[in-house]
Image 1 (cartoon, rainbow, N blue to C red):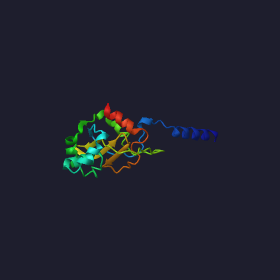
Image 2: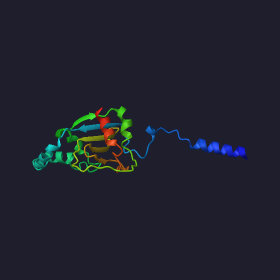
Image 3: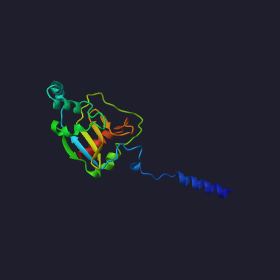
Image 4: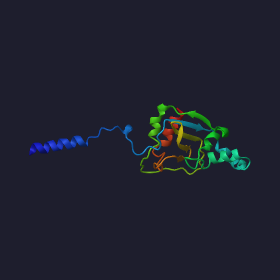
Amino acid sequence: MKQISILIFLFSTLLSCNNTNEDNLIIGKKFFVYDAIDYYKTDFHESKIGELFDNISKSEIDSFKMEIILGNIPNSITDLTFIQKLEEVGYKKTTVDTSKFEGIDKIFIEKTTSENIYAACIHVYRDILIFKKEGQVVGTAKICFDCLANQITGTTANTKNFGQDGDYGKLARILRQ
């Protein structure tokens, strides 16, 4: 009987051992399944926000510029015409190297957090990521690093906690390497 008790104890101890690496721990559903990311960036300065409002009715492109930098374009994953106009309004396009995908995957994933932090400021979306799979857009993410804000389309994952726990800083470092 004593031997059986010892065997059960050893067996349960071995089962309770967890050899997972924190870096490989996946908390929840990935936002996107992709094989390419286009990264658009602009150096738009907050001091020019007034000009955006002044020029909104001057032309369609001025109106678009305000909506993409300060507003809610795109409204959904089916609203993709904006991508063709990004460079016209001052965004520069680069392609994110695939070696950075692992780090990006750790950020664009469902997660829980004990405390959400938000900044109260005007969201200026200078950074836009376009996630693609086999050439087709599967998701978009507009990021305001100053206000810790985002607009994400194309996922069924819960994006509520995106950017918490220092993820905005991590993403900025990945994109600017």
